[in-house]
Amino acid sequence: MNKTYQVAANKEIVQLMNLGHVKQRELESKLGADLMRAVHLRRLHISSSANVRLEDLPFRQFDYSIVSGACCENVIGYVPLPTGIAGPLIVNGRRYFIPLATTEGALVASTNRGCRAVTESGGAIVFVYKDAMTRAPVVQLESAAKVLELKRWLEDATNFEELKRAFDATSQ
Image (cartoon, rainbow, N blue to C red):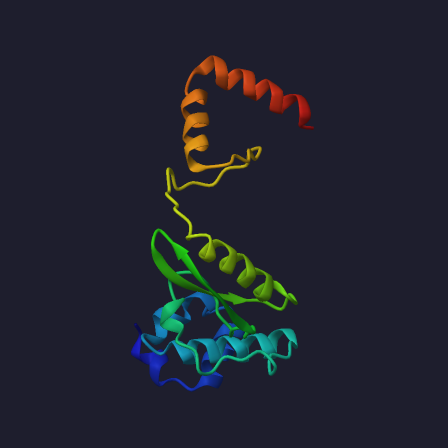
């Protein structure tokens, strides 16, 4: 943190940014805990140097400590989305409500119907075997027990190769 930047006028810092002496990504570290000011300065810089209008992009009334250093860099604001709630959904005996931020019509209503169907049928029993991301063919089975049976069958290299050949024959 640099006290010089903390006491400098916004106009001075924006001038330094325009000259390339201060980079957008450095604002939070130079200003310390004043994350809102960093967002404001970045907006001023962008507006003055790129002739971009940001008035319609909200930036006040947001806790930037949630995203700073975690999930978004060079923050200039946030986008408010309508948020609906679906549920309850019973999973492993616990009741959940699911917030959905969307502008897609009927998404919350249809998700809610699915939650009701699952809940009224006794809820869902789920488990995570492995937390990973893959790009692979999808196999639909009728139960978790059948999934486990297929997994064990695929652990045999001969079976795996047989299924791989079948999938590869239909991919491009």
